[in-house]
Image (cartoon, rainbow, N blue to C red; front, side, top):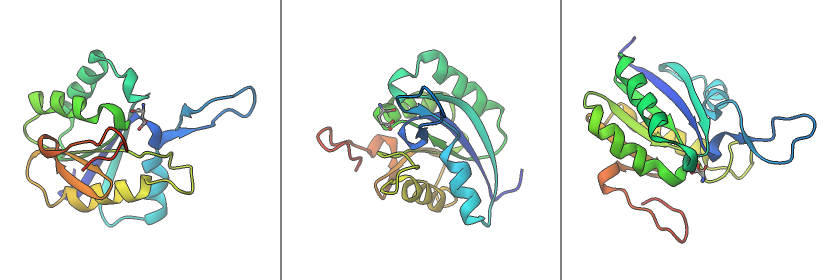
Length: 164
Ligand code: GLU
């Protein structure tokens, strides 16, 4: 794995919501990871690999899922990790990762509106995470709404849903 390489991990969330069914669909489902489409568009100067770990609304992520994430991260040699995740339980996942992973720069990001929407914040949030990842020290961070902070310093306004 090259020094300037990012491992992107999909866990689900609104960022990846879509109407993937051609027939008999009636609700959002979590589709292919948005980072695949965004990265393809921008042809980045860094190397990357992608892992589609699971596709869940973050309210449905279980302890078992978070254990799977931890175990997967332990197997990854790369230091630079960006996880896309539903916005409702980013902090819960960060707390868990912080307990078990001490040698990586991990940024959790996502979006309030699906990347498929023209008013989505997905590209901006992912871009903020990418821009920050090579500049940070080892730790667990959240990148949302133009702010990238260690999860311990991250707060959420529960009326607006905004992280700050
Ligand atoms: N319940 C959703 C979740 O956290 C909220 C919006 C989102 O997906 O980001 O997964």
